[in-house]
Picture (cartoon, rainbow, N blue to C red):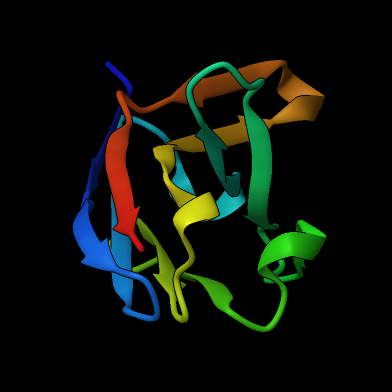
Length: 117
């Protein structure tokens, strides 16, 4: 059974930091691309950051220079370090594991991030 379990969300003031973690089980973690998505009320889910199996990263423009995605294959965990948080970063953040060549795509249950002004 595949499980992606996010943690680290919470309430923080603008300018603060949070680190999200996503622990994966039931998959060969090292071969999956891992991503963080977010969905704010009334908006579509958007990709925030992604890291490939090879360690290549990409970010949505709005978080470049503030967020950093990383992975620890030994711990089957992907992280999202979020600095200089803004109220517009408020959303539910979801972890995703994808292996497109095999058609596998899994989601976590989400963790709420709320940034107060």
